[in-house]
Image (cartoon, rainbow, N blue to C red):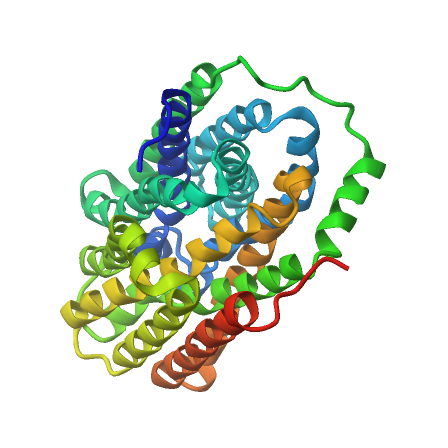
Length: 395
């Protein structure tokens, strides 16, 4: 499927930005043990750096959505990237774990404007019939950012240290900010509107009274909580099992992103072969089996293979939600997508905390079995509610 030249250029700019922002967010995961030793902190505390990024990413959404709807996504987008650049540069200089946590909060808030606004811009310019393919192409770059953040940061840690990894992430986001500032086509951009709290609240009323939107927000909350809770604990778990350090953890985490790349390559075929309903079901079943396999601890190589399946399953479900939410309230698209991202990252942040508690109370195996049950139920319920069952309509 091909797109006209302005859309291709827009997708390219968004892809570079998505790559940079995602790499900045995910680069911390294989470095948990290294940072913990360097800053004399407990690994389980350092693992919450993922939550420190995810929570502000989530809570900034209800603010950024109306701002983008009023002032224009193309105008706010470079500001978010520039702020992320500054935050990552300062992370590289952080002298204590407390300061690093504060800077990760700033980085998460800034990154909150990148992917949701990208989805909104794609929704503005690409027809619904080809939108899932367009979004999947953008997501390929986001997934490569996950791959770089999860694997290359682990590989680079031994060469340039965790501070060097954060410095490199700052350089990448600076390049993306320049591309976004000068690369968007100015022709056709609507003039900014007056930012009004009353209008922002009216947009959210339209969004939250749409029953399909509410289902999507509930599903993506569970989606984030289920799939991402595991990731910050991969490195500590491998170290505890005596199966490797940042290098092996980086490879296992990279496998999740490889599964996402496989989805991006196969999405057109999957939609033709399965349709949306069976896409949800297949994703839930595949994820459930992958979580069960990971609970058995067969070794990091097997874990990596299972993580490929888990990444494929996640994007089969998540990308379908993303595409659906771009169309639920077209005249408040940025606000609708922002609340979707809010729900996802609140789920992700809560999942990381709950999974840590689950490991302490129930153990690794039982916690992953619970995730398997949640993933399977999510796929089945999503298929029924969004595709096969009586379709929700706005009230």
